[in-house]
Amino acid sequence: MIDKKELEKMFEFHGHKCWASTLGFRAGLIALNKLGAKRIKSRGLYAVVETGYAHGAVCFLDGLQYVTGCTVGKAAILWKPRGKLAFTLIDAKQGKQIRIAYKFNPEIRERIANTQFMKKRAQGIPPHEIPDEEAWEAVNIILSASEEELFVIGEVESTDFIPPEEILGAQQCEICGEWVSLPYIRILGPKKVCIDCAGYEEGFEKGFEGV
Ligand SMILES: [Zn+2]
Ligand SMILES: [Zn+2]
Picture 1 (cartoon, rainbow, N blue to C red):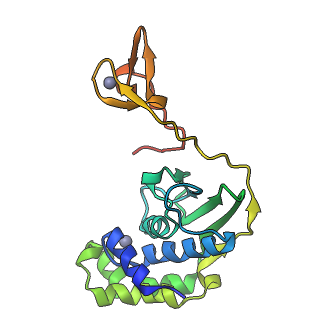
Picture 2 (tube, protein in one colour):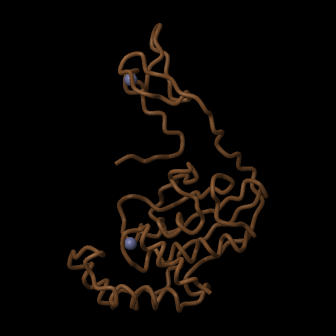
Picture 3 (cartoon, rainbow, N blue to C red):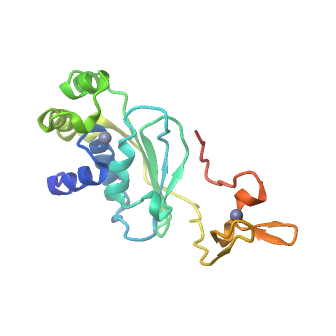
C-alpha cells in the first residue's frame, strides 16, 4: 500500500505532481522492502542510478531519493548514466543489493501517453502548470498497476561495495582563499590549492558525465 500522505510530501519535495516521480517512489519502496532496509537518516544505503540528464521522466530520481533517503546531499547517489529509469540500491551494512528497472510495457506506456498530462507536456507546458486532477490521472495509472506490470525486479544479491569514506576537515586554498574539503586539495609547487586554481582535470570519481 502506498501512503498517500508520504506521496504528497514527496511531491512537495519534488516541486510538482507527476507519474515519473511516483514511479521512483514505488520502485524505491520495493527495493527497501526486498532488502529489509529503512529510509536512511544519514548513511548506510547507496543508490547507483542509471538515469541521465538528457531524457524525459528523470523525475523518477526525486521519488527514489525521497523514499530511500539516498539523496545527493548525503553523497548517497552514485551516477552511472545510461538513460534508463533504473537503479541498484545497496545496503552497505548488510552487504546486499538489488537492481530495479522500469519495464518496457506497451500498455502502460500507451495509457500514460494518452493522459491530458502527457498531451500537455508534449505541447511544452511545464508540469507545475498542469491542473492537479490531470496530474493525478497519470499518477493513478502508476499507483494502480501491479509491481510486475511496472518493473523488472532483480534478485537480492550480495555486494562487496565499499562505501565512500567520509573525510572530515578542510583548509583554505592558498590562491583563491576559498574553503576546500581535504580530499580536494591539490599540491601546486609549494602551495596547497583547490582544483580550479591548480588547473588540474576535474577529479569526479563517480562517473559524473558532465553536460
Ligand atoms: Zn516530475
Ligand atoms: Zn582556489
